[in-house]
Length: 320
Picture 1 (tube, helix red, strand yellow):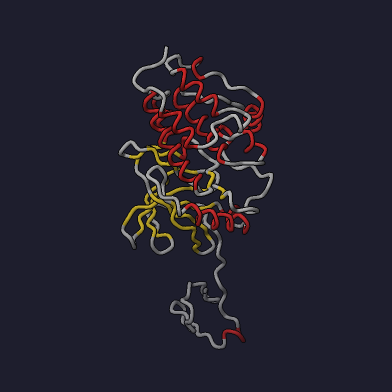
Picture 2 (cartoon, rainbow, N blue to C red):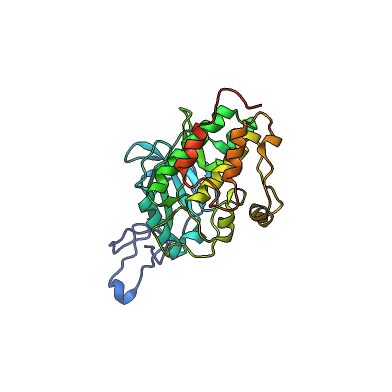
């Protein structure tokens, strides 16, 4: 509430302004108070106590949905990750309804290779998601710094991610945005899948608009490009792209625009990763290409099946 005379903020229920001293009478008759318009925030400054409990520490990253911050939950005295949802997305009631539904489902996933999701909340018109804070480095920065990763390390990361996906898939959840930026390597060298914020419960008919592509173009499956018939095998395709990038240091498909990349996912056969790195074992090269099949019925049909195939690849020496 604001004083109409000096515009000072007033506590609800007060009938006078402590700043200028003006007194108010029948609020309904005279309407002396005006309520402050609540506008969604698009950023949070470091040091701010947000929503009365979250002290903003630093920016962790920015994505299509919004900005992620490291914050201290002052009530629980523990660090969390806080995603501030972009105002234009938050204004879409159907999108918020979908996030509520999907977060409720994603909270059920408890697995050592998956970062925990907590709550979707609102503060003065601003929507945000709280989640587990994981100290470490995301796989995207690791690949940029090191180029191609050692075979053993690449396979170990893929094994852990496929294990986490198997658990999510068993509960009817498809991530739909598997990429290096959503895979954190924690301080104990464990891979942790982040951000199920745009996942889709396979049991939630009608919660996602048909014909709307969601994901990151460089890692999207052909069926994601068309936004139809998306299921668990789409995550397997995306993990295949990630594995390709880990062992070669390059993406199989690049383009000047998201559309040009999308066309390649649909129509272009990826180059054999062994042509880019001769040290890749033959079994691993074949596994990656199987993940990247355009026809999802030819890919590995489950994350468990992919995990089994990865586990059978020798990790002590390269194939000749």
